[in-house]
Amino acid sequence: MNGPVFPTTMAERSSRALPYLALLGAQLAIGSAAALARIGLAHGTGPFPLAAWRMSIAALVALLACGSVRRCLAPLSYRTRTVLVAAGACLGLHFAFWFMSLQHVSVARSTLFVTTSPLWAGLAEVFLLRRRPPWTFWAGIAVALMGAPLVASANVSRAAVPNPMLGDVQAVLGAVCIAAYYLLTKPAQSEIGTGRVVAWTYTSAAATMWPFALYVAGTEALLPANAAAWGAVIGLAAVPQLIGHTTINWTLKHFAAGVVGAATLLEPVVASAQAWWLFGEPVTGVQVLGGVILLAGVGLALMPSRTIGTASVA
Image (cartoon, rainbow, N blue to C red; front, side, top):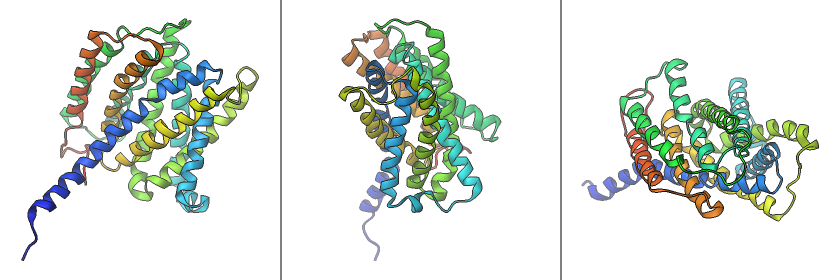
């Protein structure tokens, strides 16, 4: 006699909901990065040292979580190693470009441009990987991008803004780098598992950042200068990196890279709220409206589809 259907159905529903809940939780964790980075920068830690310390701490924890360095880092095929090292370099550069951007523009404006990554990921999937996301993905991106500028519309930093256009360009370069990271690491998630992927990529990101950090050490402090700076570094490694980005890596088993990138459009909402609370950057009714539109667009982009290149929730 067959067992009851209801518990099985509930288990299936929970299994299908888990990737969506994980993606949401990851974005909330990642949303704390802008405020933490701004604190670290304000206390004299430069963009490259900040990125190097963030990735070094995260890499150490990821390696310890694997049980042993040997288990995490070997053996892998030459192609897989090369892809993961390249992905790690992209991840490190993403943070460096974004932190540089935060020196020139407000949190919301920088975060808006850095979350254009789904556009670059989606375009790369179409033109480089010959994959076509469903129409709902592009429609969701279009809706979200109508809301995102409203979120950042009145959020102007109180600090001096010496070169806002440079900050915008740096944030976009950060977006391109994180889109490349998503695309490069997606196949490896199923092949070797999230733990080994993040051990490789976080270690590679740290190794990429330290030469830059050492190069600028003459003009920027290599070590965090005080407890607040160390708190920002440790916070960046613990919350947005180990919790947020590690969970994002896991969700790549269930969603296309462009779809995961679409979820990052939630970040301006979280970052703007934190910037208002911590730094006094105002939040207006127009921004609230933009947040609602943005969330609706993200929901549309995440709609399940059987089209090639979309999520396949197991």
